[in-house]
Amino acid sequence: MKKISIKIQTEKLDLKDCYDFVTDDSCGGIAAFIGTVRNHTNSKEVLKLEFTAYHAMAIKEMEKIAHKALEKFSIEKIAIHHAEGLLNIGDVPVIITAAAAHRKAAFEACQYAIDTLKETVPIWKKEFFADGEVWVNAHP
Image 1 (tube, rainbow, N blue to C red):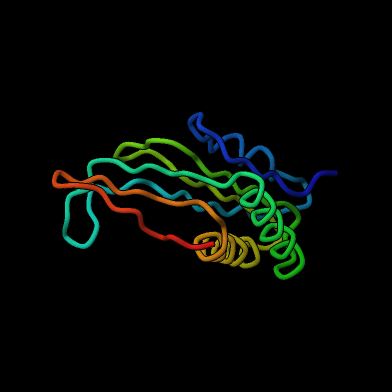
Image 2 (image 1 turned 120 degrees about the horizontal axis):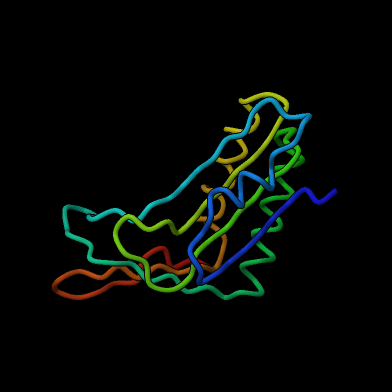
């Protein structure tokens, strides 16, 4: 049985896809983190975002995060899906779902996954404003 689902895609992310992947009869809790593009950052209006990934390394790092979450939090399954390309306000750049026998493990796994993803995965974000643009979260 496959325990992780990792994707980076230009197509719109699908919460149902992530939910369906982690659904398991042995699990009493499914938690989800859904990141959305907000309309501001640091009191400045955001018009849109662009995400770019170094695919081979990003997939490998996301798999590491998923496997670590499986070990650390007693979850049964986890999905980590990230968007690439231009996204508008309200669009979804990241979805993480986790299933466990008990809710606490699922919540903790989702938080660990998003926090670690933002720190270690080579996916870069460019914010577009009325007066220019800037790359943020430039890590590995």
